[in-house]
Image (cartoon, rainbow, N blue to C red; front, side):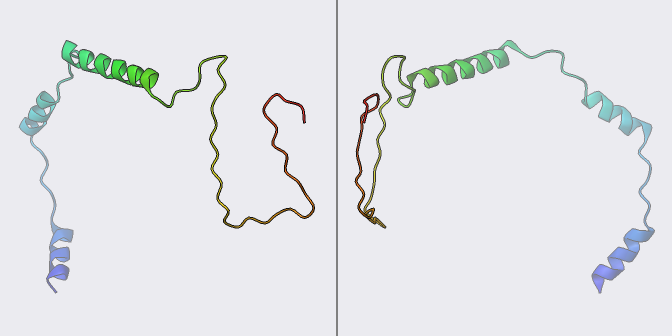
Length: 97
């Protein structure tokens, strides 16, 4: 019952218009920033430098040119069904079968 009464009051209520003094205070509080401080630029530069260093020092980086990439494959026997009259041949990369 109280919700219905509150809705009726809110339908009839009209918000007062803001005064010019309020407008002036809001505009004065929202002055544009003149410039970004050197401390902020230093923090951004340090963050970028750390990200670049972490990228180069990461153990998961790709192999250097000329070095083969190491690939590890793990298999489980779950659901294994042998091929009928088939054989599997494992060939090293670059070798002819």
